[in-house]
Amino acid sequence: MKNKAVQLLESANLRQTSPRLAILNVLLKTKAPLTREQIAEKIGANAPNKTTIYRTLTHLVEKNLVHQAYLEERTWHFELAHNCGKHQCHPHFTCTVCLQTQCLTNAAAPMVQLPKGFQLHRQQIHIEGICPDCQNKS
Ligand SMILES: [Zn+2]
Ligand SMILES: [Zn+2]
Ligand SMILES: [Zn+2]
Image (tube, rainbow, N blue to C red):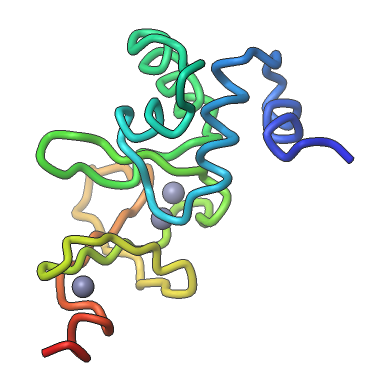
């Protein structure tokens, strides 16, 4: 059976390179969006250098295999695009107590009506609140 990362690259007509496969494999295994540093950490000792990770991620974003899920403290968090609709990403929920962010893959929101002249690319929603675990602890 083919590795899922290989299938994703083939679907986008991209060559299989080790940085692409390493990044996609990490994103396939994780449930929440990751920063570049976290991706490098998870690849481990054989991780490509920072510049390669940066370029590879930018390329995967251009090819729509990876989405920039949200910006937090000036750092983008990346995830696979496969849980998103054509014009909308699933919402993300950040707990203000434990600071964990979760993907709400089953939640969808109505599309915002844009003023005249604006063109929609993608709607992304980032919600802050208190997660169920933290509510139970208090
Ligand atoms: Zn998305
Ligand atoms: Zn929490
Ligand atoms: Zn997500």
